[in-house]
Image (tube, rainbow, N blue to C red):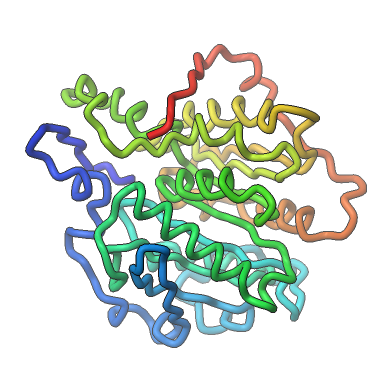
Length: 322
């Protein structure tokens, strides 16, 4: 999500352009990225025949990713030569995978493989974006990892920022046995719900055809699946109340049994919509979560709830399927 996006939802509007602007405006080719991106390209074909041109980084690619030396955990943090997990990264709608290079660097420093997904219509992936299309893109990315004889041996973690958080949540809800954990950052309950709060066009939110209803999908994720929620206190694009509401919903997900003790909600007071990953302590918290997910023992790990969130009346309702 970007502050420049306006959901001018009228009968003549083009929903794909309005919701996925980076796929149309100032579109750039992967040729503009550093050589590490060009050398790490992987083509993934979706169920409807669209070719996605994504990037796959093993941990040893870390040395080539130094554009953002401030990002990621300190070098003193434990690093294993063999990858401990594969993280599938889903970006926001007003950006592309190259904008999340510092996020990739952070996960590489933790010893993870990183698959950076480029949605249909973004950068040099084929097709035109839509909710149905991006759901297929996400599924194809997961199938690519889970179908690999080596990658399938280690945990698969989904990470999504903004719209990417909705993509990751939807994917996790449809593949409960295929993923090991979910990380979502500065994302929303649903697109219509966030559009509703915007000046002038909020009254037209019911016309928004792209739903991305995470509030309805989150309860379908098994209670045993660890979830990390990362919220920026200065997010003026997606108000933090959306993350708080999703956390509340996650407390009763899965229908039966207690939720995972590895669940965490981490708030960063000075984190904006984009760039929360640069906040002090961010990568330490992510590192603790990844370590707990990938470790063979979780003795001593205690999930923390956000007590003030549980006590708030956030009036969280669930919307139907898009």
